[in-house]
Image (cartoon, rainbow, N blue to C red):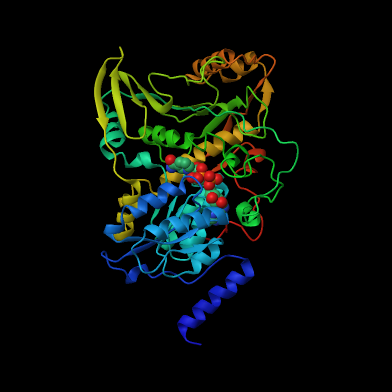
Length: 486
Ligand SMILES: NC(=O)c1ccc[n+]([C@@H]2O[C@H](COP(=O)([O-])OP(=O)(O)OC[C@H]3O[C@@H](n4cnc5c(N)ncnc54)[C@H](O)[C@@H]3O)[C@@H](O)[C@H]2O)c1
C-alpha cells in the first residue's frame, strides 16, 4: 500500500469506526487567484435566496454557483429552474437534497449555509472536513459547545469561515464608529445595550401533530435535532420559536445587535456572569422561546444588556417602541454622550444633551468580502471571522440558558433579585411598562427570571450549575453528531 492510499485507508477506517464524516479534500492549493470559485448554497427557502443573489452578482469576478442543496424538493427545483434559466454556463448547476453527497463533490470549493440553526455547526464542520470554505448564517451555532468546535475546525483545516452578520461589513459606518468610541472620544463606555424590538405575532396553536409536506425529507430536515412530531402549522421559518431548532428572537434578529454591542465593548470572550428574565407574553401558541426578554451580561468593564420585545408599543398599535431612535439597534452609553446604531450600515454619536456630534455611514458587500478572503486564504481579511460569530452567538445561548432554567416570579421578587446590577432595574422597569401597555398584568401572568450564572470564559462552561452545563451542548441524533474531534 503506498503512503497516500494507506493514509486515506486509515482515514476511512477511522471514519467508519467513529461515525465521523470524512471525505477527500478539495484541492484549494491547486487554485490560483484568478480561478473560478465554485459555490454551493445550502438551504434557500428564505435567506438563502440572498446568498444566491450575492454570488450571482459576482459571476464576472469568477464566482459560479455550481450546486444548490435543499431538503425540500419544491424549494430545490424552483431554485435550480431559476438559476439555470438565467445562466449562460454550458454546465448547469447540480441539485442535491443530502448535503453529505454535495460535500463529496470535489469540484465545489465553498459552501454557503442558510439552513435552520440546528444544522449550522454540523454542516459547516462536515464541509470544512471535506475541504470547503464556509459562509454560515447567524447564529453560527445552536449551542455554545458546537460554536467553539467550528472555530477549532476552521483553524485546524485552515479554512475561511465567514459569519452571516453582514453589519460587520459596514466598514465606513459601524466599524469607524467602533474605532472612534474605543479611542475614548466619549470617555469610557458605561453600558452597551442591544435592542430587538421587532413584531412577532402568534404562530397559532395546533391541536396535534401536523402533516409533513410531502416535498420535504423530514429526517434530513431534523438532522442533529430530535425527530419529533411536527408541532407547528408552518414547517419552515417558525422553527425559530421552538428550542430544538431555533434560539428565539435573541438568536435570530438579536444576534446581529448582540454582535454589534460586543464589537463596541471590544470583548473577545464570553461574559463571566449572565442572567435573563422574560416570557412568551400576550398570547399562547406553539412557540416556546421568549418574545419578551432581558439578558444581562456582566462584563467587568461595562455590562451588555439585551432587550427583546415581540409585542408592539401598545395593545392599540402595530408600531414598535423606539429607544433613542432605535427599534432594532444598539445604544452605547458613554461618560460624555452616547452612540446609536439604528441599522446595519451606520451610526450616530450624540453628546450628553442629545445633540448630534458625528455620523458614519457605509457598507461593503459581505458575500464579496467572503470570496475575496477565500482567494487570499487569510482569515484576517474576513469582516466576520467564525470566532466573532461563535462569541456573539454564544452570548445569546448563555442568556437563553439562564432563561430556560428560570422560575416564574412576582415583579417585586424580580426587582429584588436584580437590584445589585448596574442599569438592570431601569431595563426591567421599561419592560414592565411595555407589557402594561400591552394589557399584560405581570402580577398575574408572571415573568420568568433565571439564575445569575457564573461562567468560565476559558473553558466556556458554567462554574456553579450542572443544570446549565447540561444545556451547553445538544444531545445529537445519530448519525448527525457534531464530532468531538474536528
Ligand atoms: N443574515 C441575515 O440577515 C439573515 C436573515 C434571515 C435569516 N437568516 C438566517 O438564515 C437561516 C435560514 O433562515 P430562513 O428564514 O431562510 O429559514 P427557512 O426555514 O425559511 O429556510 C431554511 C431552508 O433550509 C432548508 N433545509 C433544512 N435543513 C436542510 C439541510 N439539512 N440541507 C439543506 N437544506 C436544508 C429548508 O428546507 C428550507 O428551505 C437561519 O439560520 C436564519 O437565522 C439570516
